Image (cartoon, rainbow, N blue to C red):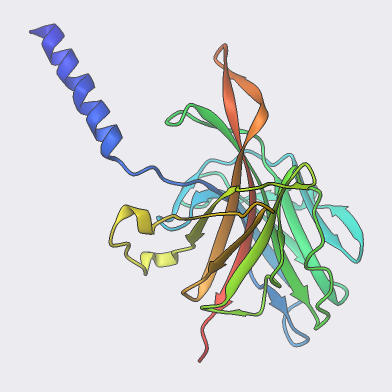
Length: 257
């Protein structure tokens, strides 16, 4: 009877696990403003986290390995500006940055590998966002030099809800054919209710040249994550496990009023 009870418990746990939806993970850099106009405050705040955007769940994020901004053809190290600021009870980070010249600012973060026990793998999402400043729309296609990266083919700001966003997935500096791209809406406050699990994470594939397209149906922040597997493994508790690499970009759409 004791063995039967244990077997029943294991079976129930496995059934519950199989029935639970697989939640997509996303690295996040969310600025307080994506377009800094002449009359706006020139200092923006940037939230850096690891999360499930639609559900509003956060995971603990270790201090990143790198945090940079690329603007005016120069890249600057911002890692020292990050301060620990929990979100949803989990470790997250925040930095302030003052824009000083017109143009586009590409912020990028390289996280430390995250061990995901449910999927038996490590996750590393190289994440970026573009902030425009003071009317000069120059530099938004600049690459941040990430191992896996989405290069925007659509200007990644000044977009209406319903506009198409198109990006080029690169790995090691080369286009990644047929890359799978996960898309989610930052559902702050739980305003949107998904009628079924597949509506939570949208999935598109890049074409043979690494280009993907998605139309954002609602106002707010949208995240695009191009996924691939690393050509190396990482060790956890004496065993080697695969590593999921993600090239992530955040884009904001606004409603026509």
